[in-house]
Image (tube, helix red, strand yellow):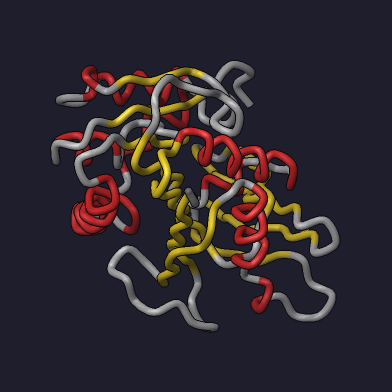
Length: 245
C-alpha cells in the first residue's frame, strides 16, 4: 500500500483508465452522467472519491460545476491531465470526513467506493458528510454491489471472479464482521505477485439506516443507471437519498 495515496497510488493510477468495458464503457459513462446531471439541475455536484475524473470530467463537460474530494494525489494527477480536468476543484483528504465550502444539489459516490471505508462507523461518517454538503432537497447517490453471499456454499468463504493463465482474482468474505477483501495474483516472466485490497460490504437496508441517521430519506433505488427495477436478483444498485428540509 502507498502510505500517502492509500491503495490507489501511482501504480494503480497509471493504468486505472486503461479498462474499456463495464464502468469504463463510454455508453455507461454517458448514462451515469445523464442520471447525475438530472439530479444536479442548475446546481453544483460534489464527487466523493473523484479519482481520475472518470465521471467528474464528462459531467463537467455537461455544464455541471463539479468539485471533488480524494486522498490519492496520484489519481488526481491523472484527472488534471484530461481535457477540462484542470478546471475541476479537488480537495485532498478522506472523503468520509473532509469538508469543502458551499452547498451542492447532489453528492455522489460510485463504483463500490463506499466499501473502501472498512468500518461501519466510517460509512456512517460518509453519509453524514455527504448530507452536510447538501442543500435542502439535495440528493446523495451511491452505486454499490449487492454482497454476493449467495455464491458461497456452506463453509466456503472465497468467491473467485477471474481465472487465467497469467493471473487469478478472488474475494474473501467474513460474514461475522462484513469484512471482505479482493485478492489478485499476477504471474509475469515466471514471477508471481500478490495484492490484497480490504473492503466492508454493506446491505441496501443498512445504507438506508445510515441515511436516516444523517437526515436523509430514500427517494429511489434502481438496479442501475438506466433505472431498471431493483429486485431480489439485482447484483448492484444505484440508490438516491434526499435531504429533508
